[in-house]
Structure formats: structure tokens, C-alpha cells
Amino acid sequence: MNKMKEFKLTETEDYRELRDFFIENELEVSGEEPVPTDAVRSWRLADENLKPPKLVGGITLAKREGEFIIDGIAVDQAYRKHKLGSVLLDKAVDTVKSLSGERIYLVARAPGFFRTKGFETVPREDAPTFFECLTCPQYGVVCHPEVMKLSL
Image (cartoon, one colour):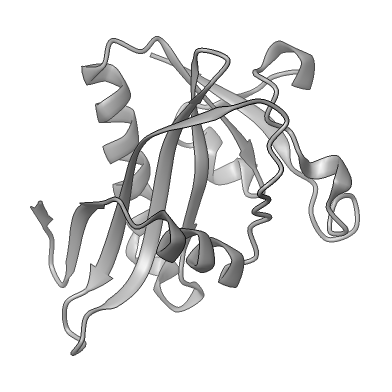
């Protein structure tokens, strides 16, 4: 557990809660994966000032084709100015480092944020098979994602 100002970061095994949170925050979540995905760890971030504490952020770290991927990261719209995305991403990066990982991939709806964290855009074919966006109705309309990689 990691205590911050008013937020509490904890590991969770309740992927259903995070999946619902990701969907509420306009992330495409599909049960049809192109290749098997092995969840590594998930974390939830809660606003401890509210009773009961409110889920305001979450991240899932997984592996596909032997590579670490961010399989979902979101922060509630009302909390996006608190740098909580950085807190979540830093936790996942530290975990990958502790597991001797060499890189992390993700599909970014907000590539500018991830660039500030050292991620670089890579061709889709140079990443694990996890780019499911082509079947999403938002793809190319309101969402222009980039496949990105962070080398550790």
C-alpha cells in the first residue's frame, strides 16, 4: 500500500471492477482477445476523503506474447489534474523492473502523456498482437491511438 495526500493505491484482484471503470472512462475493453493475455497485477486508486472511498483510477499490467503490456489505465475525469496517471504508471513500471522486464508496450489514446514518461511510438507490427482498435467504432473517428513502447 502506498499512502498519498488523499488517495490510496492498493493492489487488487477485482478485475471486474477495473474493467467496468475502464469502460466508464471510455476505454475499449473486449472479451475477445487476439492472443492469450496473462494478467500480472492490477492496482486501484481510491479517494480516501469520500466515505466510502471512491475508485478514481486503475491500471492493469499483463503479458502477451511474452511481453509486458499496459492492458488498461484510466483516471476519472474529475481527478485528472492530480497527476494520478503518473502514480499508476510509475507503479507498473517499477513492477516490470522488479520482474526483470526490458520493455513495456501499450496502446495510447493520449500519446502525449506517455511521451512525457519516455514511451515512443512504434509500428504496430513491431509490438505484441494487442492492437484491437480496428474493430472499435471510435477508431479513427474520435480516437486516434498509437502503439508505444518504453525501453527499461
